[in-house]
Length: 123
Image 1 (cartoon, rainbow, N blue to C red):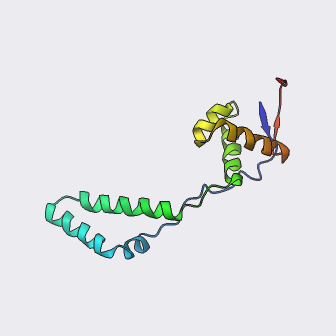
Image 2: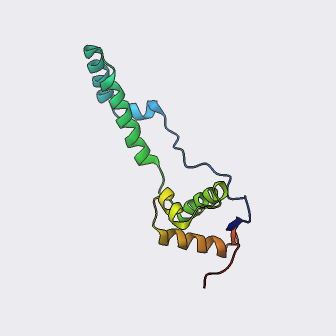
Image 3: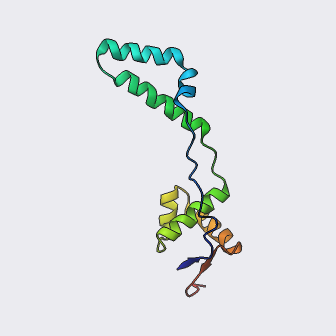
């Protein structure tokens, strides 16, 4: 079992992008108006909804920052706090990382004294 020694790094926002619809549409105005026209002529909002979803998706890909080791370690801490019995394999699956990367980050968190292993050593 691993004990989290501090909650100071658990208070963070998961990187939610600050997206403004006006800014997204401004760069694709012609496509925006085309989608509205097509939706109006068909009497179906599908072209407009598809346009907006595609635009939002592209903007998220552009504005979402790359994950840093510190971000990964914060996510590990949050998961360990919410589900203390998670294995390395389960952490890896949830964070879409390899078990080796999880092992590395757990070792780093131990070095930083942010977590502490409690239990017998399997050495």
